[in-house]
Image: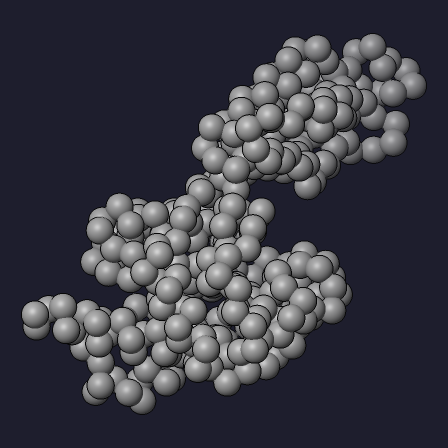
Length: 305
């Protein structure tokens, strides 16, 4: 199964569209060879990956409950076109939050004392969120990606909105960041006499690829035209809600893998100048086709045996 993602900003539109293109290319090839295959192949075009919301819905609908092997991947994260990383590790657990502070508007010149400033509450919260100490047991992260507040220059801000994420190398470390963030959000609201609302918008977990599939990727990548470097493992350091799907398959006795498909990029991920070498598309399609063929044969032999 090949994972793709949502279309929510320009850079995302570009690299997520190319993930979809890989999936469609693979679908076209598999249709040409369908008489050579047994069993079922599902192609999952995953929505809302950037907000880590899409995978949860797919898991909860049972789409993966009959899956023996789950194959997923991502282009980029490498400056070398044709480089395949079979086992990126270090997927950070993450929680995505929307926070709203509700204060009281007032005339900033005539009666500022009549207001409760939601902008000040949010600003204080941001500074304190970034002051959460890193944990001794592994990487932890927090980011406030959006802060919007106020209605006019002469009005005490009655409302403020923030989009926040926490991350940690594992569930325990992410929970540490999450609990610290909750305390800061709550006590900042008390300090500025405003109310607050927290909505959990998405989450992802840590996950480890299966060694059987790691070995298979390395073996098959050697025969793919355009692949000139194969790395067994590399620290990833980001979050990815494909891990929810990977874990679901593994929990039900199947095997999962996440592959990095290297390509030269014009600018970093999540940058408006992001672009990449399109030759990775054929490399990715051919690699996934080879993996599907091999797993189809091994599954067939297992059933017949």
